[in-house]
Amino acid sequence: MELDKGIHDRASFDCGEAELNLFIQTQASKHMQAGVSRTMVLPASTPSPNQKTPICAFYSIAPCSICRDTLPKALVKKLPRYPVPVFLIAQLAVHREFQGEGLGKICLINALKYLWEINAHMRAYAIIVDCLTDAAETFYAKYGFEVLCEHNGKVRMFLPMKTVVRLFC
Ligand SMILES: CC(C)(COP(=O)(O)OP(=O)(O)OC[C@H]1O[C@@H](n2cnc3c(N)ncnc32)[C@H](O)[C@@H]1OP(=O)(O)O)[C@@H](O)C(=O)NCCC(=O)NCCS
Image (cartoon, rainbow, N blue to C red; front, side, top):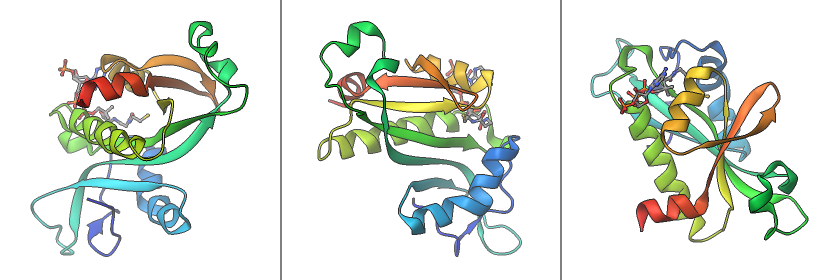
């Protein structure tokens, strides 16, 4: 479901990465209000002492574009010479308490399915992610993401939308 600061206990979320914790705690809701990204959460079934619902995992998505020249040469040939539209999985994280139990995989599949549905209305060439850590890179590589380039000190990976379409059709 979509993040709702009135319902979800953002303060108790801890995935072990300060940047991602800060994002869900202070920025995700503002970014949604500003219309720049959407954050979806996997809520816990039991409430926090403050009666809010803890967040087990979340992901954020946004439209984005990449320069065609960052793509592998074999893929570039058929693309126009202007920025290529893609979807960005801007953030994806699982609460420390639940890591290693398959929630990351569920979140990623939910994100891919959601973006696949959007792609039926507004096309994007690929889905990209910017990896904070080597562990994140290993996680995304498991699901077919390939390294694209370095972006703001992070490893940017991509998965062609054609691959995602094959997954759900
Ligand atoms: C990376 C992260 C999202 C993975 O979520 P998770 O719920 O722990 O992972 P899952 O249990 O769904 O594991 C899915 C697969 O990825 C693998 N995997 C998960 N974390 C891994 C890690 N740190 N290193 C290597 N492989 C990993 C698992 O072995 C599993 O493979 P399997 O199905 O063959 O056993 C989660 O650990 C996390 O939030 N980490 C901190 C924040 C972060 O780095 N997010 C990435 C944003 S760039």
